Length: 61
Image (cartoon, rainbow, N blue to C red; front, side, top):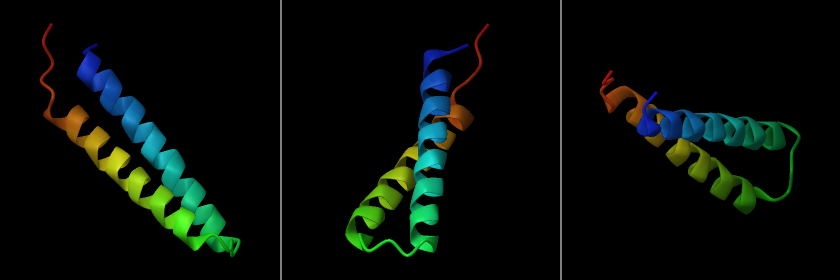
């Protein structure tokens, strides 16, 4: 397995966890909206960059 693909998978998983956390806290009406916005944006960046790495990396045997 390629290092870029592994890093992309890790980024995607971290982004997913961050998005779930931000959504959970928003549903529970947390008062720290600024922190949740920052966590949500960073999670989106991680998620989409991880997906991009996994999708654009060629598999070389």
